[in-house]
Length: 183
Image 1 (tube, rainbow, N blue to C red):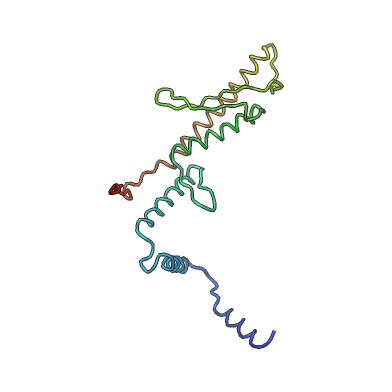
Image 2: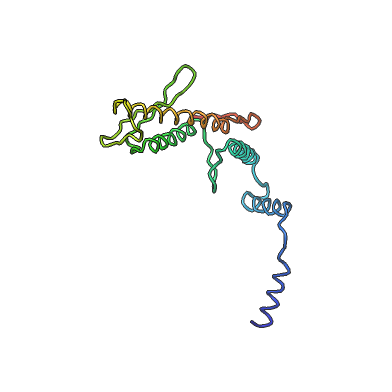
């Protein structure tokens, strides 16, 4: 290393800032937005969308159902129900120790409630994980299946209600009218 390299390294070390403050972070974010969007900065509708995303992110963290790391994914009611159904399907399969292909889940409406219903067809070589005692093995299998489905259904209901609380936030202050094409 020669003297010129040392002088360059010293000059670079002097220009390094030791602390990253919130003001410097906001300045860097603003500079990046202006480089990307031009001198006008971030468009107002994009700022509103970001506000909505942050509100949804905070709400979903509160209910224990955070957005996936590394990106954003806004889920509606249908996606929440589908995700909860997939988790219930896996839970029932693991509780009964049977292949997931033996289980069919569907939703049925009962009055104002929506309940998950499981159709379970255990494989012919399935061993019941409980002793049947005096009970007929087929009745013991049906009782075990009903118990597992009931436990999973209760958990499903709690999970869905909590998660729906995270996606049901309505922000009327950022609602925009839909304009039809001139077609």
